[in-house]
Length: 331
Image (cartoon, rainbow, N blue to C red):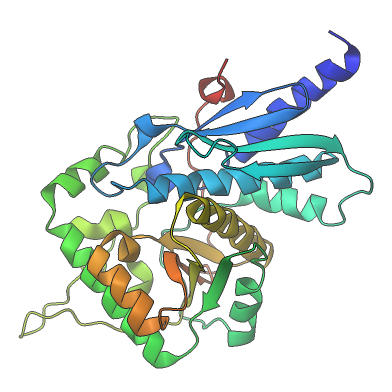
């Protein structure tokens, strides 16, 4: 093998290693990769699907989309441009994207900043501070999404925020009563030292405060003990952004995942903590309400993102575990 081919092989492996830092539902890391001399192919690993919470595979494909964008950022950081083809084989549910790698004509000006954000990005499930995020800052983060057919919608209206908090609570209540879903979720808590969500990353909270709500606090009640038994919903100071798409198919899900990565890396560079809330789109009734009652049917909501300021004095959250690169490479 020639020296340039050896160099490209080690480079593509490094790109995949960094791409695998992407966020994924339950930290399932549902992706597989095939390396060529000057290309990388991304595949969905359907053995890691969550059949109860994600029967359509929407969250799985969104997770793979985040890894796809991470790969593009990682390639740029090592001096490569990428030519991306999404769904290169429309008949295949596994082959999600192909990336052809070519030497960059010019250095990418934000490569170092993007790479630093990619390496330090983490899901912060702990409680944020009560300091509000200024609307202009939230709008700037939402505007960081630049993919065709994908929209970042910052919820700055108080009434919209209140409606969304109600929908999040309603979705969590539905899921908290689903024993199969809770069993599935528990299988990914402290699953191993290479995937799943470590219990240390889950807040020890009752889930009643908006900025304490987390998927893994479902069993600890999302309701306050009020006389009429209804959930007491409060609008917190966190920022809320909906990622929506013009269509609702596999390519839209893939692009939504790319947008999630794009937004998340921007927020990380802006020193904002981020946690995705997919529950509201996993329950069909609340997803429909979010689309029609809050978004005016303009887009199909794919994921809700909450962001805020981390408490002062807290060290950076430890990164969740990742599978070794050899485990995600196809022959």
